[in-house]
Image (cartoon, rainbow, N blue to C red; front, side, top):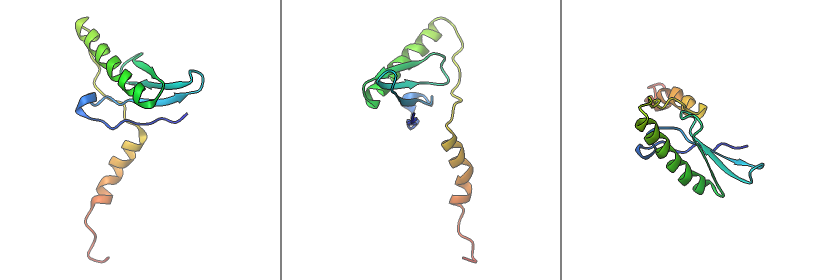
Amino acid sequence: MAIIPIIQSQFVKNYHINIFYSEEDSGYIADVPDLAACSAFGATPEEALREILIAKTVWLEAAEAAGKQVPKPRSRPAIYQMLSQAAPRLLAPPSAGR
């Protein structure tokens, strides 16, 4: 099972989205780890993304309408964490000795 991270943007309000192929369902599943039970299905990754964006919007609107606290985005794939730790070292100016 491969997980395809979707680049964060204001459009998705910084909630990480996973998209993966499910052999059992013969299609792509998308989910938002920070929003309990927020998931969607699509025949293609693009369709799953369109569907999860709708599901995420409905989830957030329903939570707000019910007066429930909306969780802040927290999930970050390991690759983002590794890149943020490596960035200062990779972006440092070269030393005079090189």
